[in-house]
Amino acid sequence: MTFGTYYVRVGSAEEFERVLPESWAALHRLGFIAEEAPLLFRSVSAPPRHIELAKWVPGVMGPAHEHPDLIPIWTRLANLVEPHTPAVVDRGLVFDEFVPEVLNAVA
Image (cartoon, rainbow, N blue to C red; front, side, top):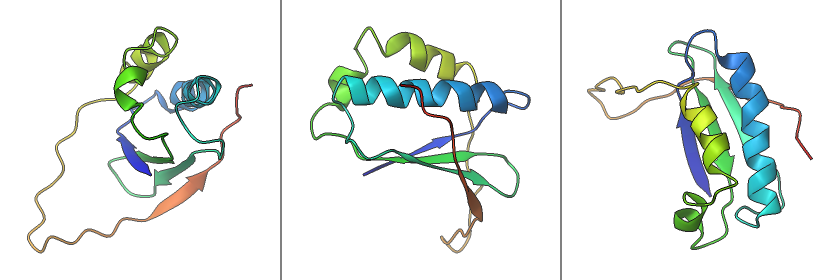
């Protein structure tokens, strides 16, 4: 299982929520992720972020990052997110509240 964190740019959430299912559909079609749908959660507090849980097929992450069907989709996603340095946490424990997101899947 992989956990991906996206820090979506202000004003880009709607486009992000349209593009991410395209990525999932392509990953399924190409056999890079399991048939079960990835899960997506949105943070309740700032900074706004999304966490994606997906089950990748072992050994395919490298080839996926070079696949010509995925590069254009992932380039669009990269333009919708921004770099982020997590805050320093003195105790080493962070508890954030997230809510499930349901996105329209692309066939």
